[in-house]
Amino acid sequence: MNTDIDQIKKVNTKLITPLIVLGCTAIIAIFTYFKRYPAGDFFVIVFASVVIFLIIGLIIEKMINRFVEINYEKKMAERAEAERLEEEARAAMEAEGGGEEIGPLDIEEQDVPPQF
Image (cartoon, rainbow, N blue to C red; front, side, top):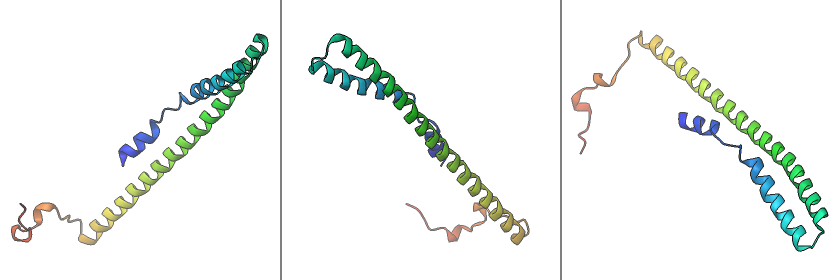
């Protein structure tokens, strides 16, 4: 269970924005090149697309970071709840048994089936 929480926190979102910017701008640059736009218009269009897709990429990156943070908080809350329930069950068993815990060494030899 601990590895799931670690994997959620280790999600790398730093590459989202550059990939969006490069990919989308490359598509627009290729499109404008094949449509034979003049050089001045070509550079304006490509620069504008870089700025627009940079903003879009940053917004998407922030959204994904927020979702990762929410999932991390949920997992931590679930873990805390499981530990609390385990502690309550342990306290109830100790109260019921008078503080006597039964360990694995208390099982008699004849009760354990042979293993091959």
